[in-house]
Image (cartoon, rainbow, N blue to C red):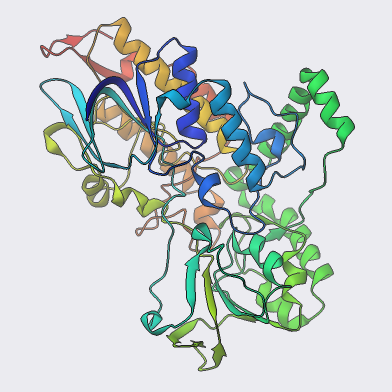
Length: 495
């Protein structure tokens, strides 16, 4: 099957659904949303491990134009967020635009026709004026190549591919990694398993989690008085926004938060030896800051062991640590996160002159304009692209800024009757020099750790360097002079 549309959107997480809503609200209905799975939801569909929940307060983790007064907890759990996305899709009539089981295999810019050719697994193809990639970075699980893993006779799976058919009751479980997913599922499985060995490479900073059930009277208030919920959302936003001072302005400010985290650790872990293993030696914020009230207590159980020496090899029914100690194991669960910076290596997008985007970024470094457009790749737009991730606030805020920006770019094409919108190379280069200068002074670079924020050269290609309100200010209006607008007959359009 082949179909011509104005816009192809990829993904049905917050980014893809948000883009689809923005198009419909602008009166544009000639678009399709391609989803590789048979259900919508993106990250919140894939991650269904026990205890999966958001680490941003619920009232901030939703679209500003579609507030949810029915959140049951201050930090919503995965099923609620997934249900929210389903309700949003239904409310805005998005299902008629979504094509499920449609995994995009590649996209190619046609310089003569000024359109994108998009190929889908199974043979379907689409031709579109604009191509919007709303795939995000947390969708390709990172599974380390453990020596000898092919000999393992038990089950092994990543937290994002949780094996719900497996009953962990009475099993000896090895958990590899101590990231955001591990600190959520470890407390949920610890009472089931016969033994749990946690292989920790670097301890995370863990803050107390201000979680609680939301009272029915609060839900009724937010339903009856939406302005009250909006005021509360604004309070949450600015409270979290203030923490950017420590991340981007002066990392020394993080010392105050570190003291809170250390007191949290000391109050929950009595053993000095275990506390020593769990105390980070880098500045908070260098890696993702985690929140939990039950992670540390789970590690104090008699049948739980924390191993910090690394993994030497995997055998048929055990894991051997770097000290040579053999740990009997029936199941291995990887809590090792995702391919983030290198997730772009999996792209097959070819722009002007047939240039391969992934190859260009590998050779020259990842560069975009506001994480949205890329020079040499006309009418291509990323949502939550490079350097727009956050460590302190809700990425949904960033997504909303981006979908408005993309819609304005499409309006610019229509208004000038142009076929091609391409960010100027000098504009993109100047922007990247600016943000890398700021990132070099931030805690992600100065904090003394290695993290998935950085690429192989130690350059931060992941997070936005500072306040999100500044990103909103800079992207609220598209500057036509930042782009080259071209018609099919190759006439440049005055900006």
